[in-house]
Image (cartoon, rainbow, N blue to C red; front, side, top):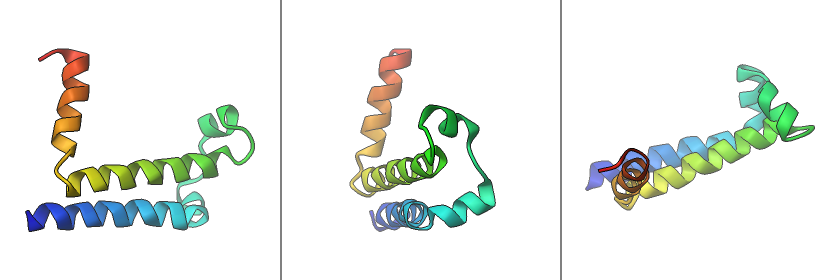
Length: 81
């Protein structure tokens, strides 16, 4: 239980870092052409912030032990049980 909480906190911290320091990540990883085309000007910045937010949600689901149930329902719905 403690291990799951610690892993979730690390995932949340990484997502928060991606949202907080978006420009730093952009300087390292570069622009995403797909995001610039479909999300408009500044699309790469928005993409990284949305990705960070998704990572935070996944980290919270890991901490609360909801990730396995969520993944099973999504993947089970796609591939069948």
